[in-house]
Length: 281
Image 1 (tube, rainbow, N blue to C red):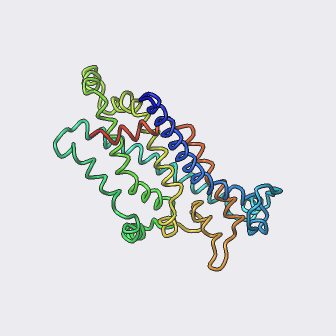
Image 2 (spheres, one colour):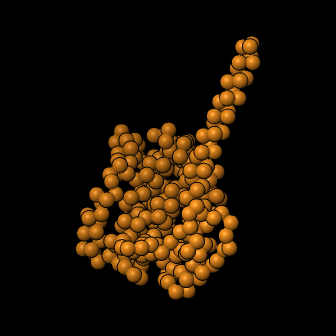
Image 3 (cartoon, rainbow, N blue to C red):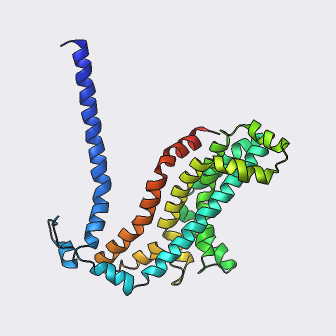
């Protein structure tokens, strides 16, 4: 066997191995989603059949129950309000903080974004009691403000760190020329800096929206029946003795849809945003 033939054989074997790993990863990722979606269309008795049937007569009973009998619409509205406001605040405050660190350069300012990232390393459950006490003292428990502020506390350090990475790519000469032209620092940020941060903003929108949309632990303690998000609403289908698999699967299927749609439209920015934020600074 020649050296060239041996090299081609190794390349083919490596490609087959990579395709096999990819296939395993896809099956591992898609199988839970398939189980949830398929169970939402199965009759309750069919969910317990082993082995499960891949061909079955679909039913919309579970969707009808959660949309007509339960407060699913209220929970959905609450999740949209909490997630959108949390994402908006994180994007605005994170980009403004990164802009400030770019303008006021110092040795401390160059390292402060990395120090802020330490907040993401603290286990979330360690912050539960302090945040609950703070929100309770200012009478915000049971309101939208409590989960919104909590999500900002959890996600703002990472968003700031991400924005700082992109800010380093913006040349200082661009800001200086705009300043010499008579633009204020606020107008420079609104007209020049913010539009250039689209990849970072898209990445932050996906990450913060997903985190806020799927957050459960803090929402259980900081909200009430009128402000419960979808995660708490789905958790109510899990009882101490049994689980309503039909309702929980239908609710989970509807809950997944918005994040999947947002990720589909913004996915092209995600890799560039994460890469730039990881290697700069």
